Image (tube, rainbow over all chains, first blue to last red; front, side, top):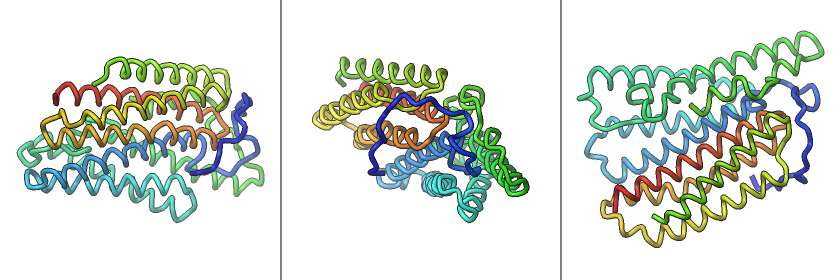
Amino acid sequence: MSELPPSPEATPATPGGPTAERPHTGHGFGRVLVAVYGLLALAATGRSILQISEYYDRAPVPYLLSAVAAVIYIVATVGLARGDRASVRVATIALTVELLGVLVVGAVSTFRPAAFPDKTVWSHFGQGYGFVPLVLPLVGLWWIRRTARATAAADESGESDASDASGASGASGGGAAPSA
Amino acid sequence: MLQPLTVVLLVGSGVLGLLAAHHLLRGRLVDGPLIIVGAAIELALLVQLVVGLARASAIDDGAERATFIAYLFTVLLVIPATIVIAVKEKTQWAMAVVLGGALVVAILVARLQQVWSLGV
């Protein structure tokens, strides 16, 4: 974290990365994913600390769920950023749990609102956060799958299709996923 | 809370967002102007932290006050984190991250103003 930015020059971005880089869940489009997960981790952690410390008695279950969500987001962020085989497996599990969580909590909070007197990040399928919590695990799982396939392809044929793996155009997919 | 400062921050993050979008379309990476604008926003955010902490006692409700203070500190993390990520990334996704970061700063500053105006 403490490393200084290398001399800031207006170097042109090479679409496919400088060299034929190995596919990595934390590179290319993965940076956006890691940033968004990091942000959600921060938001969920802050919210759950506040909820549990300030008014835990009001609604213990939603508040504990907020804390669980926070932990899952932290695990997913670290797993995607590290990108080695074990980390990616952990991240896959975290994202799957996240998807199930947002679906179950979203459904329960919508159809039985009495069960959730106060909000969590996953209430109403993440409506309070622009439905990002619902879309994000889908995008994340897609990205992990895509990276795994690119890795397999790179291992198979000695030369890797780096331009395909790291996402050539910044504008097309990136705008839709994180900012909504 | 301090309306001129909020306006400066919103304009600043708008400029950073536009610069990032420009760089993204032109295929450029992190450069001097981007870091200078980011640093200027960060400085204004530090001023906001000091002013906000000094005036936080005006918010009556304890939980609202805690939220307000938490936002004051959280918003400081966004720009440094996005710049670090963007420097490491050598494709155009770097600028997508900065663009997202600028948006998040604007949203958090607006939220701060909202918490403040509802709480006082």
